Image (cartoon, rainbow, N blue to C red; front, top):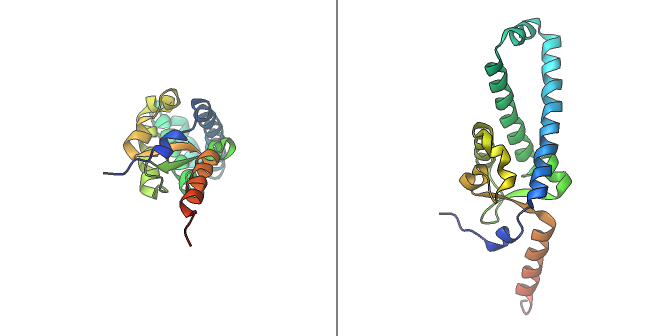
Length: 159
């Protein structure tokens, strides 16, 4: 069982920051998604024909898969920070304060992509994707400041 730190809980990102993260990331996703689709349709007439004849469900599944992969890649490459999180000063960490592994990032993004109501997770304390992957979105500045203060206090009297 993973240890749970209260410092992580105290510095959770606000609902407003999480909502901003979602909106910013959604806009970024759609920009990248449409650019990639446009390029694929320009260079491959077969892909363009296939997309034109694909039903809505298949197009939605493709978008969801691309969203999962896009979000996973962003968080993995940037160490838990999507474009929205970079702008709002937040980051994904484990409940024990450690950096998530690529597997943790993948799990949280699979859950977020498959359980579509989880997109509204900013309305609650934690979404399924955070609860099931033991991750939290925190305010980096406040979290790091408290960790530094505790480190400074612990180092008093030490050589």
